[in-house]
Image (cartoon, rainbow over all chains, first blue to last red; front, side, top):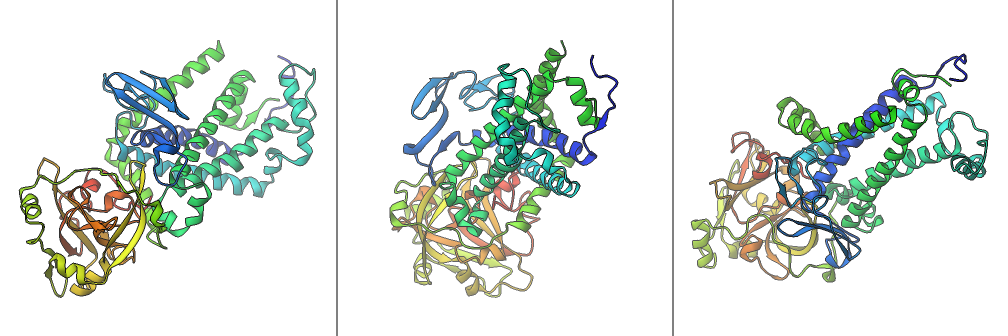
Length: 261
Length: 245
């Protein structure tokens, strides 16, 4: 209980907090509904049209009661986890991802699309509102990785690995946090949005080069899926950090705005 | 302790998404909110530009068959047995000059050939070489009236419960240069699995808009009174009418 006398600081303006929690909801809904959509065609090809010769991932059920996952041509039995999973209504069936992971929690492609396309807009509007307000208030500089942060990345990692006793000096966010936020907010999230748009035949007709840039429509689907995994990876590390670095203080600050240094 | 509580609450939050959203999915108010994205996508993406056209070597010689296979409908089987000699594509509704077209007449109209990608709502894609009559040319032949808004495609396949497949486009989508009433796939007349004798090709939207086995083309002011009123067979099951994304 050190430093309790230090005054709390108002760390997160309301727009940051609102967009943060809306993003949490949007991410969960977009992942769940995205897996629902994926289930309708549980293959990912590194190609424009579907092409079994360029299949990177295939989740399937070769026989009743068996689920398999094939990655780069290597097949693993994943019964119960992938390929042959619970259907959300008490029995099992040939669904790539189980009903407990999909939105809605039963097989429904049109329902999944409805949730997905709506929350895609929510996430995009949130991002835009956050970006504009942060830019106006000058808060972006605190979060975005600058060239002066680069030499501090390894010392910070060394500190986390207990190879160093003290962290390098930094202001609000440490260099690794800045690297993570910059990657998620300015690289991965935009990539996921753009690869999602590249799947649209309407967008493809307006901007052919976009789909071609990602290697074609099925390849864009692969990038979109990979981007989702990266976002989930960030989500996992981020929640782990929150849970271990003063959970109550962290949660309170993202709810009320006030952080106890 | 706190950490364990946190992990447990995170996992329970994640796994409760399915049941919560399942219940919400059945709520009409929630659905209408979620549906608002369709209007936004239609307004912003719409039907603009041209779908990419490919080279001969990109064509899938075995074009994937999806949805209903060859219709079992008695009327269809009779036409098929006669090699579609008795087939007439009837174009009617809000038009100045309703009429029927036999296959020879359709073949004599200006033809367009396009090698385009078919993007299924399920996620897969295939490339085919399609030839036929641009829908715009057919509409010009029957001259839609001033009250015409949509073109409805009435098909010959039923889902086993007596519902015949149908689809619709607005006049803007219908007049898009790549919107085609296809008579041929990969240099051969359409076979029964791929929609013989006449099917629609709308490469700017998802595959379910490209109705197969078309019997009639009906020009209407509104599709609100057709079946469930959402403008298509899959639309009536909850899929978007605007299928550009």
